[in-house]
Length: 147
Image 1: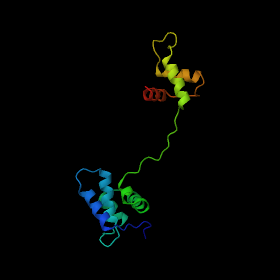
Image 2: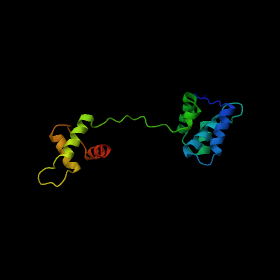
Image 3: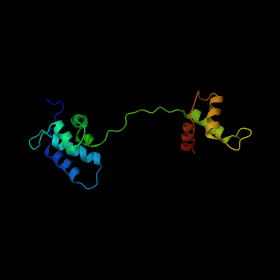
Image 4: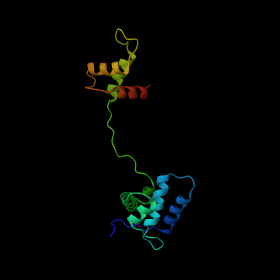
């Protein structure tokens, strides 16, 4: 027995059918709509099993189970959309450290150098003990962002 049973109302079925028929729609959205229509256990629904749906739509059974779960827990609209990244990115430099970087970049380059390079800037930040270590790419992105 399935843990997440989808029972669509007629309005939701019409909405999903319109998504499938629509000419310009994201492939994943169309696939999820087809999947939900086949998984419908309501009066008008075919109530296919996850294995039947995965075979018919060429997707993994886990995908079917995940979309089914999202539909039950969060609703039809949420099940149609791809889930965004939940990863939290921690900033490498805070505002004060960025200010140090900009101040160094705007200062005179070291003796024997015509201009600051990303490597020189990264090394100078470590030398001044603004940060314990920093990648050149972080320096580049910060300077690009704060142009």
